Length: 336
Image (cartoon, one colour):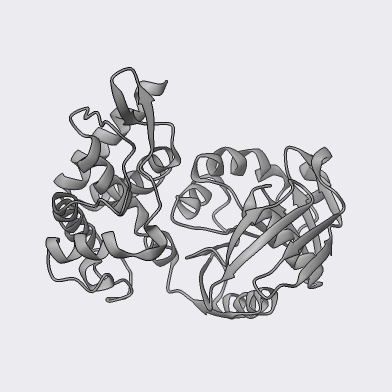
């Protein structure tokens, strides 16, 4: 099997190195900086192992690495997906499975718009690894695994979907479950609700702070109330989409909370989130939002906007989501 990893970020490094070290087929990398890559990538694992994977070819020429590939895996942030699909479209084999390591930033929607209607598509609901780059193009850190992976596969027969899921299970050495459709892969990430809710609560009205504040540790009850309203509107959208009932828990159920007060307390208490700072920078009169942060540049235009667009297409009123999105997009546009 010939695999092409597209993108040289943390996940691109880890998946390429790990896959090559585990002999998961012929692994190539498509990146804009091929000269910075070694032919061997060293990946250290949570078990203390050091895996060395030999990359078959690293190139910025899609004819060399994309055209031969049976399977292509995008490891890109949302803002790069559409443009990269358009650039690589002429080089994809018609029977190649084109996929994304993460589906909630619009991969399936962009791919269905850009690519041929019969192009096989696939995408993970959640990323398979927690990853960090060590030395760019030379080493990476695999910090954690998902115990089970869920994936959507589109534009092929059921038998081919099941065969591809079996291939993914062997590739990532994990149980892989086939989702009913791409909506279930695309709409399962809570960040497009969580982050816009707390950012709106913190910064709407052009608030200025005398210090940098913590994103979760200082989560307010008003932010929790807003999040609950946004989640309720989101679930009204799910009711009209072809998804399995109960495939996602509500935000209150997920965080084992009963109201805004208990939800805020829960979010403030999560150990892994304690040191996450709000996206801020120092201005002339104090600390203000940093609208160039990925909390803004990803979660508003490539997360929340997708939800609102779907709701409008389906005729589902989402006034709270619209208000938060309009605010976030207006802030981002001040950068241009």
